[in-house]
Amino acid sequence: MVQDALAAAPPSIASTATVMDWDNRVLRQGGGTYVCFPTPPAVRPKGREPTCLENVWLAWLDAWMTAKPFRADRVGIAYMFAGDTGASAIDPYASTATAENEWVVDGPNIMLIIPNLAQLEG
Image (cartoon, rainbow, N blue to C red; front, side, top):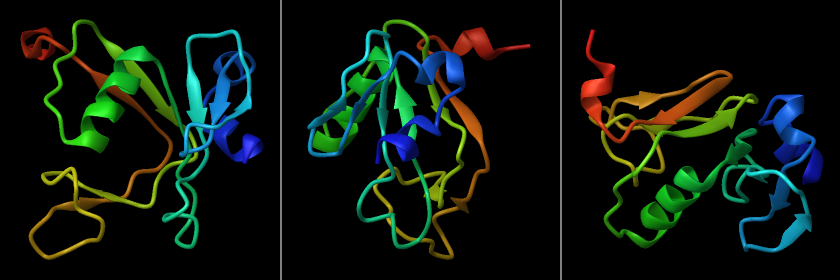
């Protein structure tokens, strides 16, 4: 699981990242600002989907998992260099593709949280 989790990030991030399982058990203590998670258990039969998150993304993850409101106070960066098995572009809680939920499967990617959408103009 540690190898799977660390495959999500570039070596400079992975070398210092803490690795946690989805039950919040620390698998490897790190000294950096990122926490890497292996592919979630429910996804493992379909493929790989490890991710490495810093504090803004960890706060987003908590809000998503508990269905609480979220507002970023700064830019957040997450890594998914092993790609993913898919997600809905319009329904953050969808677990499978449907004709209506705009399912997207990504290859290796970096995700950004931008607190001020005006920063994306131009």
